[in-house]
Image 1 (cartoon, rainbow, N blue to C red):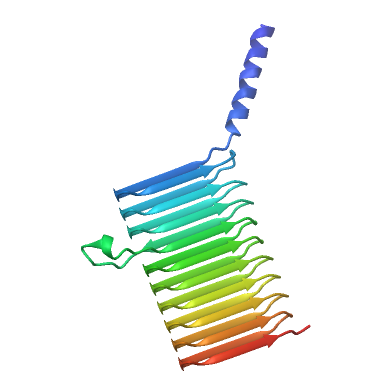
Image 2: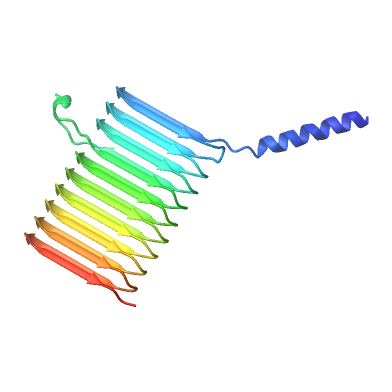
Length: 254
């Protein structure tokens, strides 16, 4: 009787250990031709990865380490490229790539959008939506509870966002062609919004310190805006309507 009770206890303990085992989840859906998807999930810490590919010759790569990472990649049309690297804890990446190529001979006029997300902090969020062709978005997050949003509608636009620190917010919207936006945030509770509508506009925002606010609106062509905020509680608003305008803002309040 004693042996039976010990055996039952051992079985219960084994069941409890098994119940605490946390599995990773990867879901890949490919519809079309010549797609490539690669997912690497290290550890047993409930990582989630979803890749949807519809069209021709797109590729996606997801690497997840750490704990509780989530990645969702949705690729439509042809020759999209996405890379997501997540470490740290509780990060979230959402990438949507949609082309607008109506050319029947698609291989002569590929879409070629590129999205790169690297998250190594805790509870950072990145959202990238690309609707057009030859756009590139690069997001690097190494802080806590940072948010980055990139919306690209057009062609040959480039957005680069780097966030460290805590509770920073960046939103980049590009509509047109050959626009360039670079946002670098450190410190805490920084807020940056860049909107570019036109061609060959350039915006650079550098925020350190804390609780700084920057808005840049470029509506036209060949405009340039540089904003540097290194203090606390600074506010900058740059509106450029037209062509060939140049603005430089430097703020350092304590």
